[in-house]
Image (cartoon, rainbow, N blue to C red; front, side, top):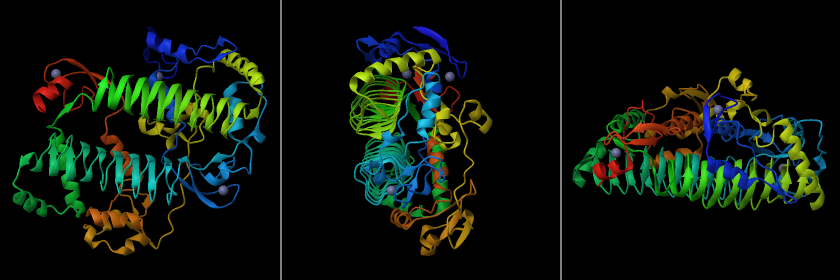
Length: 565
Ligand SMILES: [Zn+2]
Ligand SMILES: [Zn+2]
Ligand SMILES: [Zn+2]
């Protein structure tokens, strides 16, 4: 084990022997010589922050494709200095990313030259995979139909304002909803139906405001229940009494909805939480882990084996460190973001899709093999700085660049924040690691002051002027913009959205979707493990509930023995 000090934040952190073994295992080999990846100089949090600073998941803009000139929705602010193409044009034969190819200059640092390459190769407006129908506003998503503003989402239909959605139908305003239908304002809801305002629930249906419930039906304001029906505030009622009490609560009223939402927050403080959320784990640490083995300090992962510092990785990923999104059979990879779909040996990359293998320091590649320092390419092999080489030339030149990067101190470091296309305040890093403009600039990040033009509408009304009840909202609302009660920014309601609110009988939102998303984000625990003691037996536990938090937290054994037998 090595103790070291983070170059960015000055915090002491440990590099375990198995970490060093992993770095050696994934170090690339050329002509029989292994080019060792050195131990990290940044702590795990600073490494994660640097990766997330590359990622704009939430800000989409009206823009124009620089090739076909059609209007499109893009992750890039309009009027960029580099070309941005729509999905069809980007995948067409109308252009060749190798036309922007450059010779590597051994007199200059790698990242500086890479930044110049980034600004010359046409970028893709949004990251969308597979067949998508009527989904102009989705990003880092695919295989979906009639969806609007969903991110990190696949196989969804009629879903709106979601993050981390998989196989959902008609879910609105959700965070990590899987295999669910007609859910509204739910966080970590799996296999749920007609569930409203609930968090960490599995197999629940026709219920409102539940927390940590499994297999419940027709329940309101309950916490920690298993296989119950007709309960309110954890009290059992007869079907008739339940229905009568439910009738008194008009969920379509904004005031009632808010009152019930606040009531759940009070009940949560009396609830006993398990040290972590997850199941079927062998030798793991983190939170929201499912079917994982030997996976540590990882969050929101499913089917990961031999992983560390993994975030949002799913489905058969093995031997991966420091990865953010998304897996699906990603192996032997280190310090990469948005990579997967049969990826193998991807090092220090951002965006590596569909059968990509042996990529280092690349930016957004699809179906590419053996590429180094390339950007926005698909179906290529043996390229360096977007220039084509033979196999022999490639294997001779890459080691020389690595040796150069060893001298400049760049080898083994992820792209610095200054290589990001986005202002820090528009990236996912700003959610997990909020920084003021000056602090972001000290880290080398840029900042965006861009404000999109206001929506073209007949009138703008303040949120508090909306009728309280969904039944009293006229169709005319589709022609208005509403001023968000928190941010003051105007937002619109779409027809599909209004129809779903009416169908679910929930009130119209008073806050814009980014603000709602931020509030849901804050309802989840941080992706950080704290030392704490089990509130029952006093055993040391590692949990995402920091010791100062007011919740009651039990170790796994006590939770199962004492609380939910
Ligand atoms: Zn640090
Ligand atoms: Zn186009
Ligand atoms: Zn205990």
